[in-house]
Image (cartoon, rainbow, N blue to C red; front, side, top):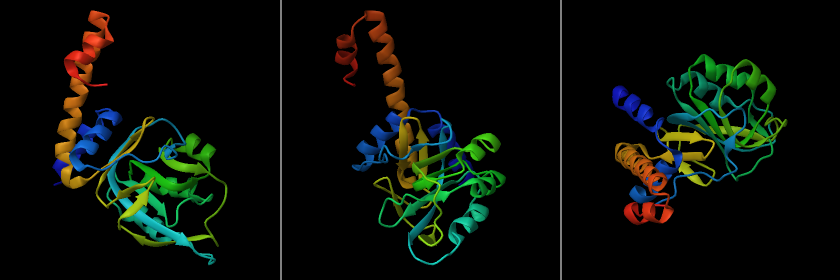
Amino acid sequence: MKEELEQLVAGFSAVAIASIADAVDKLTGKQGYMHSSIKPRINDKRICGPAATVLESATDEFLPPQHALDLIDEAPAGSVIVISIEGGQSEVAVWGGLMTAGAVANGHAGAVLDGGVRDLAEIRRDYGFPVYAREVSPGTTLGRYKTVASQVPVRVGGVVVHPGDLVVGDVDGVVVVPIAKAAEILAMSQEIDQRELEQAKLIIAEKSLRKGLAKYGRI
């Protein structure tokens, strides 16, 4: 299982995000890409790995994000930490410099947040760790939100993420690949990539977009 997961991660790391999004559309009948507000906030590094999920909800208690802190230490290396806030937008940071230090120490692949990130200068300077977030905010969750569960299905950017689903992201956006269909989705993504490469070569050679579209039927 570990070897199979490593092969999937390697495969999805090498294909276009758009191709993955198209393959998820076709093979699941559902949109797999997150809302465009979930985007890279630290750098343009690509992320790819199995989701380790955290759910937060509103509170007036001053509580540390314990489920997230524990998960950063306990999730397998290579995980993408995915944090969702019940009820949607937050204008607070659910991720910062110390959590980044823990994620780097444990070998995680990135973080995807349906909320904010802070300590950007520190994260860029000291870690270069990729964080995809809805917003940037200096605000704390203390007294506003608390973690209520980990490794449960969550909704981020309009897409449901189950623990273990593959999360793939770059400057084009973030796509969630259901793990049960991952091999099939990867094969179709690779096929789409190859067809687009051949189509682009034909367009250049023939100096005609129409001829490329006529032969391959893809835009």
